[in-house]
Image (tube, rainbow, N blue to C red; front, top):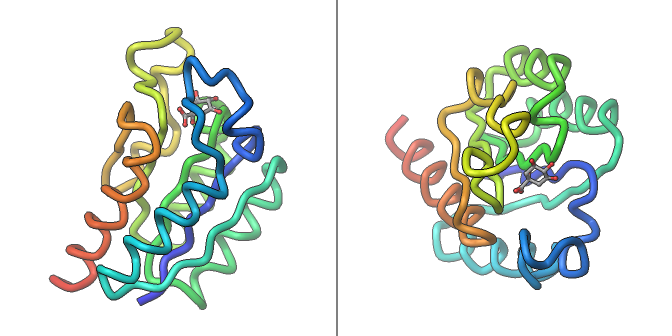
Length: 145
Ligand code: DQA
């Protein structure tokens, strides 16, 4: 099975962006970690990033025909985007929500997620490892169904 790993706004800046919050790992490093983990799990991945809400929505729609599940770090759109929530609800693919930081331990505006109600589950606070945990969760789900 193929998994779309979709990253939202500002995540292209990982490594230099607020390293005290998000760590020194770059998005390229995370892609390499995911590639290795996916191989071990018998999954293939497509790894994408966009700063544009509409592009993320188009990528979620397109995933329906080419992927078995989605791992989504929607960045700040997590806390604002009903449109992303609707897109996920529309495609009926299993989605795992990921955040590097523990959004529940930060500003109150980060405590709300529009993604969580339409996701299988949420992984946050474990840095880049969260993406690997999400791959493991999806692999288990896709094998058992
Ligand atoms: C984030 C958390 C969001 O609140 C923030 O806007 C991000 C990154 C994370 O991975 O911790 O851009 O999704």
